[in-house]
Length: 169
Image 1: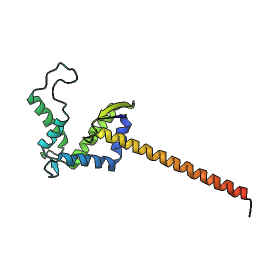
Image 2: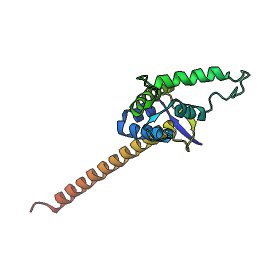
Image 3: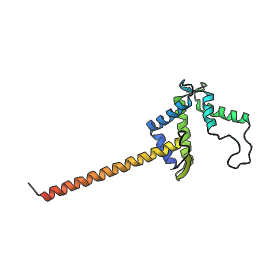
Image 4: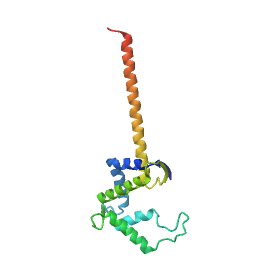
């Protein structure tokens, strides 16, 4: 587990970087496509959802009983139908990417503008971890660019001062 600090802008920035977001989502899609046929079946997507263990029972100190198997199946079916935009019975890469974009933007809206700490699974390819790493890389690149600019300006000033000190030729 890792702990990251992020807010909605962290997630929005990651989603807005289309090449980075596509690489991340496509890698997750490939990992979920167990049989390698280029689409996610209902069973493949369900296995992924089950791995989140959101419906294992009460959890977090709740006294509520675990949901009934029929309720769980109905929920997984509804999620699958949300991903399967064209109703083909399979989720292709574009459908998966589009739905993950919608989900991540909804997460960004939910996070708002106040930074929070979030524990994320650093072994399973967490989109939130990738969003935080993406933001950190962008900040590091801006800092490096600023340092390079300041250095170039200082060198130019030094060269101009040296030329002025040398006098006219």
